[in-house]
Amino acid sequence: MTPSRILPDLQCSLLCEDVRQEINGNFILIGVLNFVGVPQLPVTAQKICVFNRWTAGFGNFTQSVRLIAPDQTTVLRKGEVKFSLPDATSHATSVILWGQVAFEKAGTYYIEVLVDDVMKLRYPLTIHLVQPQPGAPAGGPPPTA
Image 1 (tube, rainbow, N blue to C red):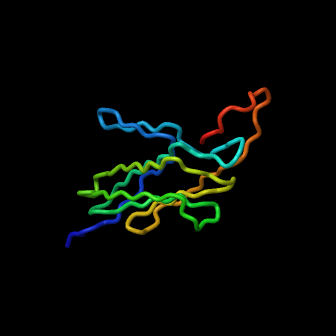
Image 2: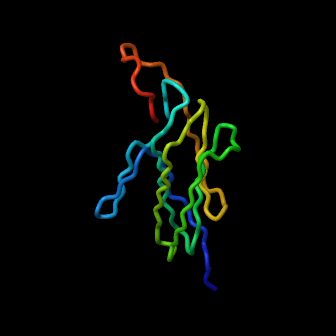
Image 3: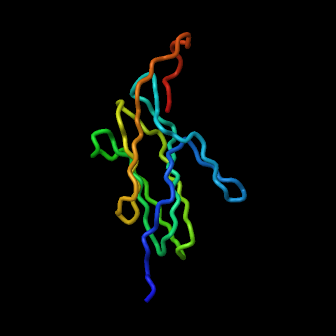
């Protein structure tokens, strides 16, 4: 008996400022984010990307990625992508792009990655206030993450 479907493994999930693809198909991740330090809040990120790579599965799937507020219940953003893995040695790469993401307050936000409503990974993104560097010019446009 051969399986008709095997739930895939999430090989990686990275939050970054941008993702580009070379002509040969390789990906370039720009500005991988561990945390965001800003001098004032609220702040708006012009673009946030979630780069996911799936492997070791078989079948058709729906990936969901959510950005959760510090209250751990409010979904600020959500993105879905359908993908297929024709055999267990295949891989699938997806990029979720969110534009104009507003962070109203400091705290720990969360990225949740699910496949077919099964949670595969949940990781933090901390937004915190930082003091301006001495001698830094005052004024100017509001900061962006």
